Amino acid sequence: MLTTFTSYKLITKDLQKSLARTASDPIVARDTKYYRENIGKVKSIDGFLGDQRLYSYAMKAYGLEDMTYAKAFMRKVLTEGIDDKTSFANRLSDERYTALAGAFNFKRYGELTTSLEGAQQETVDNYMRQSLELTAGEEDQGVRLALYFQRKAADISGPFDILADPALLQVVQTTLGLPQGGNVDAQAAMIKHRIDIESLKDPKEVERFLQRFATMWEAENNVSSAPVMTLFNSADSSSGLDVDLLMSLQRIKFGGV
Image 1 (cartoon, rainbow, N blue to C red):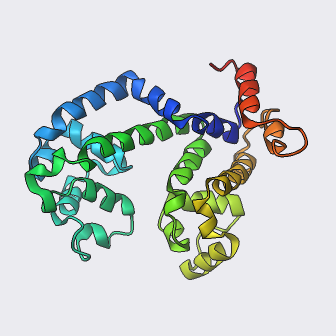
Image 2 (cartoon, rainbow, N blue to C red):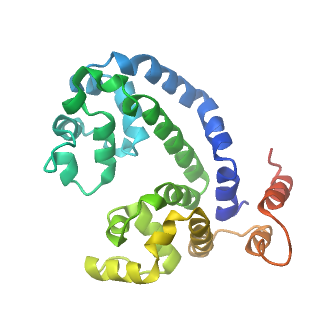
Image 3 (cartoon, rainbow, N blue to C red):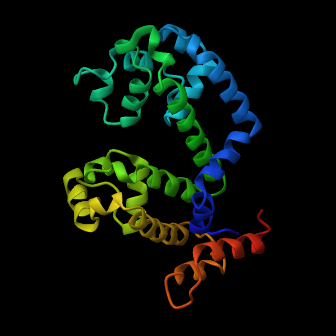
């Protein structure tokens, strides 16, 4: 059984290759082909919400698939856009809504909206990453959380960004052994004390943080550790083993390609 951190490293070692594998999945390829061929034909919010396949694709791309049913809610998000600080999307604490409203900014661009980068390649790229994370989560939810944290880490500007995002918060609570619930300001102070937020802009620091997360995740969820995990833990020691060799060993052990 692959450990959480090993699985995470196998995916991120060559992220573009992992994304290409995701894109080649028959269902993903079919839905993406339909999206690319038809999104440019949409000229209004009504048209966007009216095509269930396009709308569902976009919602998944921005991590909002669980809200696909809430069309009245999403209509308000899209109708008010993001240019006004008091718009509906900007009043929501979840930044996924502003991301989607920014990509599909019908209020600002009108009929041109779906011909622009946000609704085109950016949305497709987001869909691939979301699909990759979801697939990884089917095997190990900890891997999905680690991939998500890696993707979002550089944009974290303070403890309240973590508190506003349940997935980020779960990673931090698991890694640091922080209690759930309690006073928000107290939680923010605790996170600020325990994490150097600025260090999360350094990919190497993020990797170290996620290795610690994976260890704690496995302990809490009773995940059996594969023997190769000890090699990862000593990869920077006198053993001299690098990640490429460790990945090769892992593929041999578990019959990977």
